[in-house]
Image (cartoon, rainbow, N blue to C red; front, side, top):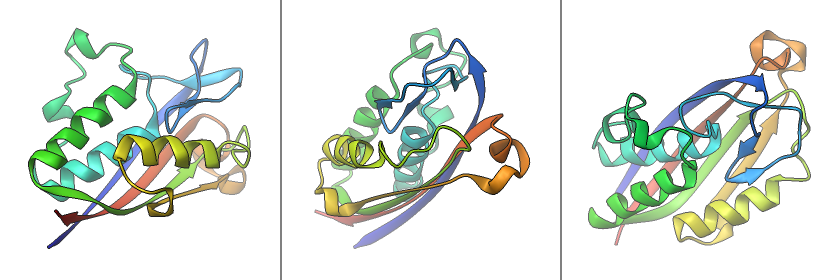
Length: 158
C-alpha cells in the first residue's frame, strides 16, 4: 500500500540567526526565524510524512507554544516523525523537495542535504530529490526576505 503526503513551510530571513536547511548549516549573514531552528526543508518533510499517515501536523505534535521546542534542532523532530512512520508500518518510497531561496545559492549544499535527509529517513539517497529556485527577484522569496520549501512524499507499507 502507498500513501502520499504534501507540505509547504515558509519562514522569514533575519539577522543573527543560523541558516539551516535540510539539517545542514549554510554560512550566510541571515538565517531563518522561528520557534525552532526554522529549517523549512525538515519542517516540510516532517509535515508531509505526518500528512501521508493522516495523523495531524507539526503543530499537533510539536506545538510552537511549548518551550521544550524553543530553538530545537528540527532533525530531532524529523527523527520523532520517522518513529511514528515506522510505528505505522511505513517507510519512505521517495521524497521530492523544492526549496525557494534567493541567496545564497544552494548548488554546493544540495548533495549534503540529500545525504543527511536520506540518513534521517533511513532510506537510500536515490529516494531523495532536492531542488532549489530563486524566484527571480519576485515576492518575499525573490527579494531575500524569506525562504520556503515544498515537499511531496510517497510512503510504502513495510
